Length: 366
Image 1: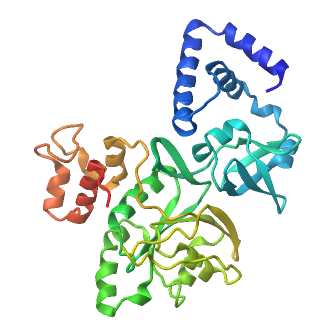
Image 2: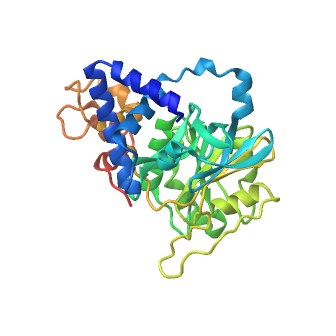
Image 3: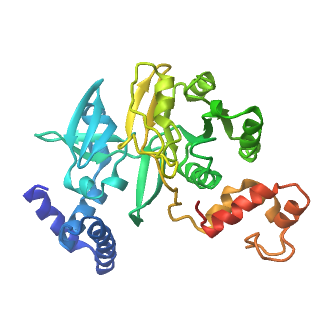
């Protein structure tokens, strides 16, 4: 921040009414606490308040179309405090400004469009997102971790064997995808490892998702089964692979584009769980106009600050029946004369679908 800008911001801050200053201080205190939890040190309260004021007072219309085009680019990779940005077909590695670096996990993600400026060139700001996929940070659940931004399709990859399918993780991830605005598809990988009877049994576990209108694609990175359907589902879109460690995301990427030679790994012998062969998210440009982000495997998929009401609203078939419930704020769990529970008993809503709802309310994870 330039000295002249700082003096102007201090004058603006002093001109705010007492209530405005109090609200700004409260927000700055919350942001400072989050930074302290993650980095053990943070800017002063005054500095944070001035930075917040600077962000809120910024006038987007002052940036011309030519300036934005010149200094904006697509984040295709991230490392600690640095981003790899694609600008005019040239990849540029640039450091993040301090404000972005301090909150990197939530402030910037692969798929973001960013504005760069300065000498040396630095990533200055993240442009507004169309969509995102996020979850609570496993190491600090009060912080939102954005896995990918501006995606059209999320390929939710599950293995049908080695490691076994985790339906609970699929349920939770689907809610996060729906909330973030992207379109989900479920990719059932490693079907070549199943006998005909096993295949029928395992794919039947995904039938409730297909009944919701979600595309389910049985795939094998080893044999190529499902690759044409996957390419068609991803064509012309920005996509992301997400799934449990060891389900074969990198192997699928290699199968989609033979020019890629991403490292893949075997499962751990001790517990049959996957290894993290992908250690950082990266965006790849594939044939057919596909832009695909590969992410590290996840052990669990928490839901970022979803209330019971928000979870209930994601089950759209419940909404059609809610008007017939005895209580207007019915949670569809314990209340008498609940139309949703009656629909489950009568088979209009599958027991599997309702069980999924109950598990998500309890915040169960495998």
